[in-house]
Image (cartoon, rainbow, N blue to C red; front, side, top):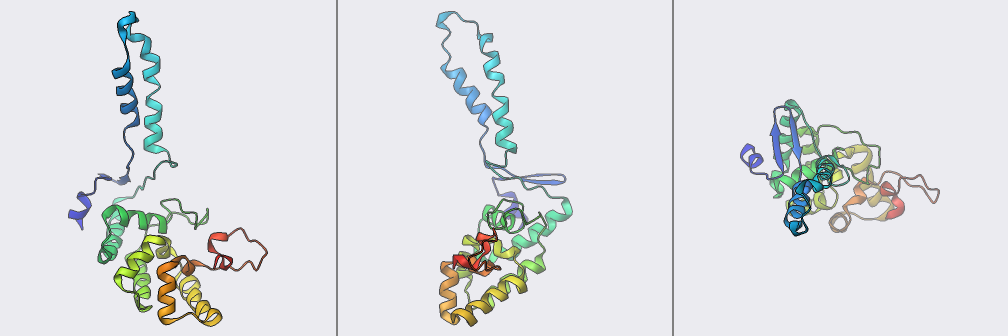
Length: 216
């Protein structure tokens, strides 16, 4: 997996941090465009644009650090080892390195997800926990290709509690809705978020709509 790690264009490793950034250097782009389009035929001195060019520094900071444009994942050396082991657990499903990082990031609070609202604190995934959930999905008779689709649509499943959410949701589907076997597999391919439903407002909103059975 280390070979795979070094191949990622979105990843740069520092001694104690792991950063992901897909944004272009906005400052350089704006500055170059300004220089290309300035016409000095009117005799204005180049330093008149000094104030304009200096403002280009601020978009650069925004592009690198703004959480509204992209996400930064920072890990210690120890935590990075755990992260890479969880990538290994996902390797059977033919995701790219960037996709694996996005799945883990959304599942464990490093990348914002509407599913969690503000409830999920950042945590480092453990190989055993991720593998347990993947094995549970396999035990539902989902193929690796089907699990690929589940993780693509609902990466947060890896951060769900296996007993209180996953097993409980499947039991509700079987007992209350009579959905099991092939029908369950078809449902999970189409709407895997049902695995994370853990509240039922019964018409009295609890402000947890992304996790409520009212959506089913």
